[in-house]
Amino acid sequence: MTIRTSTPPSSTGSIRVDFQQPQFDRAIFDKGYNVKVYRAVECPCKGQGQTNLTSCQNCLGLGWVFINPLNTKALITSINKNTKFKYWSPEFKGTVAASLRDVERLSFMDKIVLTDKTSILSEIRPIKEDGSQKFIFTSYPVNSIDVIYLFNGSTNSLIKVNSSLYNISSNNPYVVELDDLIPFPVDFNDSISVSYNHNVQYNAIDIPHDIRDSLTTNSNGKEENLPLPIQAICQKSHYITGDSPKFDGSGIKDNSYL
Image 1 (tube, rainbow, N blue to C red):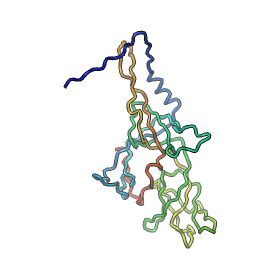
Image 2 (image 1 turned 180 degrees about the vertical axis):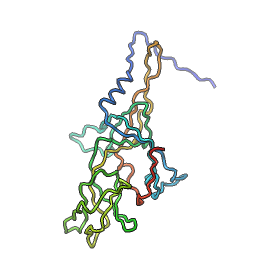
Image 3 (image 1 turned 60 degrees about the vertical axis):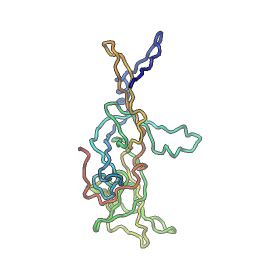
Image 4 (image 1 turned 90 degrees about the horizontal axis):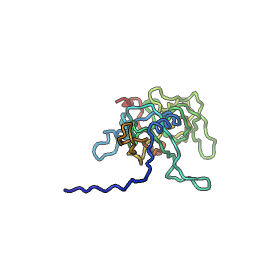
């Protein structure tokens, strides 16, 4: 088989501008957020052509294991259009662009946690039981709980649960344990509303610039490839992973440092 080679255009009289990788990397570290990046690996609990096991204590029932955490920096920017006089675009909900250095390669579903930045999430969670212990799962590891409410019928006020009657599990930060002294209503619907503080967390859903190189001239006058920062489109994790884990969390396996 004969492979043809394309004829390059003439460069006579043209001026080429080269990128400067150190300046790109410096900008990321000067202006970026402190982040912890986890590599995403599909959990083998799925098997061939199957769905992930909701009882798997390796992936927490999510189908993904997050390993090899790395502390680094990332530029995080919004990608939504100008929404000053428009409705917010639903497809961009919770979505950002993250730029990291080329040496810190990203792949699909990699997790990025902003270690210095927190957010507040309110969600409705079903109550589960492990023996005599009642608890709920949350979508993110909980830093602190703002408030928990119980539904007490459509014509009655909500019941605010005293902060002394719940706590974050010492074994699993996704678990909030509930005390038996909580005044559950007679017609309780087995769900509670919880508002809590957590570190901002994203997962990579697309890598539009998986390869981002440029040619540059080195100190010897020779051309060489210059790797540039990688950009990923990321979305807040609870929009991607959906429901939270479905087991009691007591036997959680730590695969982070595999």
